[in-house]
Image 1: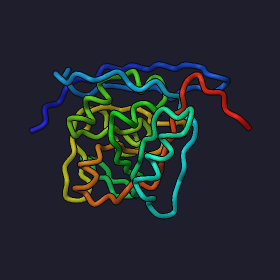
Image 2 (image 1 turned 180 degrees about the horizontal axis):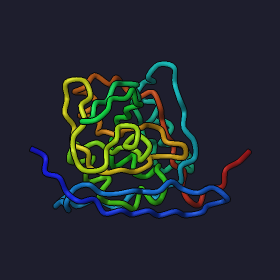
Image 3 (image 1 turned 90 degrees about the vertical axis):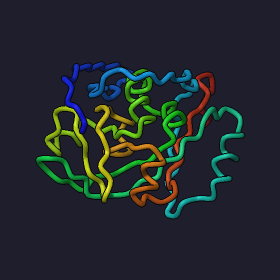
Image 4 (image 1 turned 120 degrees about the vertical axis):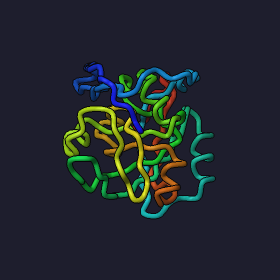
Length: 194
């Protein structure tokens, strides 16, 4: 079964233009042997929400625009998440971890344990979602018929895009559809035009 580990608390607050980035709260698993590439240098610019999932070629076309460094797709569904003490209806986001890493707040981007957890097919809960479910340490949550280990607590946007992040492959297994949100990361040297 899943072994319980003591979680180290890491809270990093960074002020940026009068807004604070959300904190990365903690890693719940021991170190992994997963080597991560450096994230793509990008600044989260904007998100495009579609009523229906767009054709995947749209993300490729946006990615080719001048000043765009990365386009991360997010499939989002409201689902019941079951923990040992409580259940809650939460927003589950399925992502390609290495692309999505480039469009999250800097504190989360720098936390390698978040991305190794996703690559190991574990869930990343926001601190608020963990509180709603009364989760304080490493364990698993159930979504549909799937038991998913919890790898870390971290925020994924300002505001958060999802309450729980999972890798795209796990999302497919639990019935999350195609991405309906595209998050665009711009070159850090780009100057937005009004």
